[in-house]
Structure formats: C-alpha cells, structure tokens
Length: 394
Image (cartoon, rainbow, N blue to C red):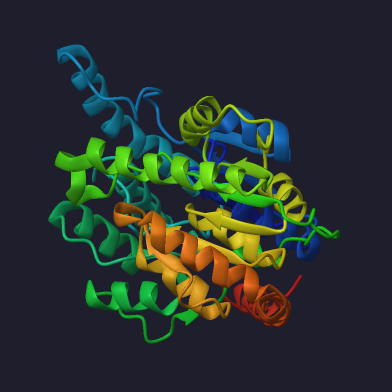
C-alpha cells in the first residue's frame, strides 16, 4: 500500500501579510482536492496563526523569535548569530521529514522592499540546500523575482533558485531576472499569480464608493537614506486624494495588505475626520476580496491589493513600488493606469482616476475575460505541479 505523501509549505506565512497567506490558501486548496490523504505541515513565520486558521502542524521558521527586530546590544547580536547556526539544524530536520516542500507564490526571490541577506534569503537558501541534500523536492511555485544588486542577497537568491527541484514564476520579468542572475530557466514556466485561483466573491459594488488600498511605504533597499521622506510624500499624497474624494461626496473604504499598513489608515482617518471615510477589517485575502467587491472602483498600492481588485473586476489605478505592479496591470488590460509610489503625483492621480471611471464599463468586461483566462492557466499550473512532484496524479 502506497504511503501518503508528506508535503510541507514554507515561507513568511501567518505573519500579517494577506497576499502571502492568500497564496498559501490557493496551494492548500489544490493539495486538499488532489491529495486528500497528504500529511501536511508548515515551516512558517507565524506558526500560531497558520495552525489555527489552516489546521496544519507548524514549526516556527526561526529559532530566534526576535529575528526581524533590529539587534541592539551585544546580547541580541549574539543571539541572532547563534540562531542562524541553530536554524541550519532545525531546517534540515524539518525538510528531511518531507517528500515535497512547496513555497507558495510570494515575492520570495525579490528585494523590491528593504531586505537583509541573513533574513529570509538565508532561510530560503537553507530550504533549497537541505532539500537537495536529503532528496526532498523543493518547489518554488508562481514566485516573484527581480534582479538584485546587493551581492550577498543575490548570491543566496541565485543558489536558492538553482537548488530547487521545480520553479515557476508569476510573470516574465521574474523569470528574466533569475536568468540574468545565473539560473537556467529554460524549463521554467510562467503562470498567473496563485491568488487568481481563489474563489471570487459575488455581488455588485456600492455605486460611487472608492476603495483605497494604502501601504506603509518607505522605498526599497537602495532608498534607506531617504526612507522617511519617501514615506511622508506617499502618505501626504494619499491623504490629499482621499480628501479630494470626500469633497466630491464620495464614500471611501480604506484597505491594507499587511498589518504594518494600519498606521497609514489611522493617519488618514484622523486627518479627514469624515463619516464618508471608513476602514475595512480583513484578516484574510478572501475577506479582502469580499470588502473590495462592495466598492465601485479601487486605487491601491500593495501588489495583492491591486490583484484582489482586478480579480473582482474593479477598475483600478495601481500606485506600485516595483515593475511587477505595472506588468500585472498591463496583463489585465489596464496599462496606463499606474504610478510609482515613490513619486506619486496628485494631479496625475486625479486624471487617471477620472479616465478610469469614464471607461469603467469597458474595463470591467476586459477584467472578466482576463480572469477567466487566468483561472484556466492556473489549472495548467497545478497539473504541471502534480506531474513534477507527485508523478502525475493521486
């Protein structure tokens, strides 16, 4: 009698980022439908939430629970260094128990936001290296990547990709970035983001209501010296845009994609002090899609805020922080409705939003058609994953 497959999931999951957890939900839906007898476990950043929400046996990603806090003092620096050594053994012990480990989506091969090499890139490298050592198949599924200038981070990301047994990407620029960093991508495929496989909530939005997705945005790795100025410019522009909507008598619903974004929501609520402006409360990507389904149009920053809006066929302006936002918008037929968060311009935003609403009927139809195509492509992705990891089927 064939033994049930042992399948692990890995990443910064359950850590407050709704997009990451949405990718996990998509993969769990696939696994539970196709391999209901699989023994599932997780090595993740937020083990308590993943265990309670998804019913998985979980292990903390790091021995040092203060891994992502800034080290201050000799003791905390020493603990971080010791934790890196402990995590080698911990990761190896967990990986050795699995037949397959899936890294579900996420920008795990990116450095578009501030990132230290000995944080998540190191953890991902340990996963791929121990997977190769013990014969456990590590699959990077529909992941995001970008070309990384910092040498240490680039090296860890390159070897994480090289040592993985399976790779697919959520866009062409991610595959191109890995190729440019020295990974053989000739057999790697591109599919839509995993979140496009999640169920789409039904219902029409309240006419005239605008969803505004905000982000605690401080720039990327190369912007640390200007982080505060970048943040202030972005938040002031979003405040001004929300105030403009209120002056038009429009209802505004504020969204976040990570719990750190709450600070921006709180500032906007305090500054506008209007009953027309309210904040959504979403604990999962499904919650967020239901909230977005209730508005008429969307202006958003975080990648998965934009994706959710597009998935529920809402005409959207994306104020992105990386080329992936532009690519997603172009693929969904909304090229031209983008700006960069670092230099977002209020007057241009008003122009784009006005044009968006004037073309709303046309854009909604385009989004419905693109969503159908994405759903079919992700069926192809899961079929390819079954063939690569499980021999083609149940």
